[in-house]
Image (cartoon, rainbow, N blue to C red; front, side, top):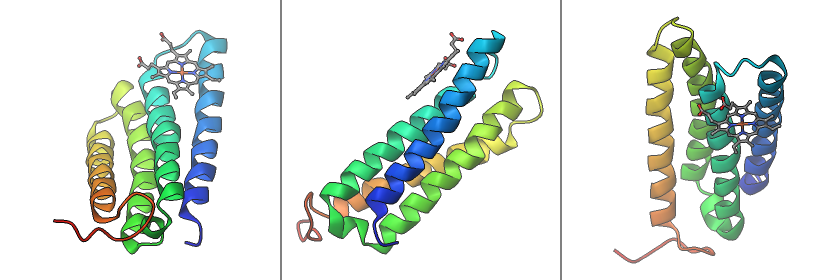
Length: 129
Ligand code: HEM
């Protein structure tokens, strides 16, 4: 992935557009039943993804690492699994997908933590213990 910061921002915009469209649909129909799923899509898909993009923009060496690619992939996967999982849970169709998505979300945040610990802000791999 050549520019992971830009990829994160583009992904964030796409999730936001879907999330906002969903919000408008909820407002128009006065049916807020699925608002927790909408909230998670916007917060994990847009806000968190934009935070990741900002971090990788100021730490380009971190962004070039394989760990960052795994982190990005898992962060996207967690949104794609968790949000429909919340919809299924709310509508009484089972909680398995929501549970799997939750685990993916936690793991993606752990990966982000590892990236942050491994690289200094601004660049070089950390040599500090
Ligand atoms: C076009 C833009 C948006 C519209 C029309 C919209 C609409 C809505 C509506 C109708 C609700 C349900 C409110 C309720 O039942 O009390 C809601 C809840 C929520 N929205 Fe949005 N929203 C938009 C964008 C966003 C964005 C950008 C975020 C986050 C960055 C966000 C986060 C949330 C959260 C956290 C909730 C509460 C979920 C819950 O309590 O279960 N929304 N939104």
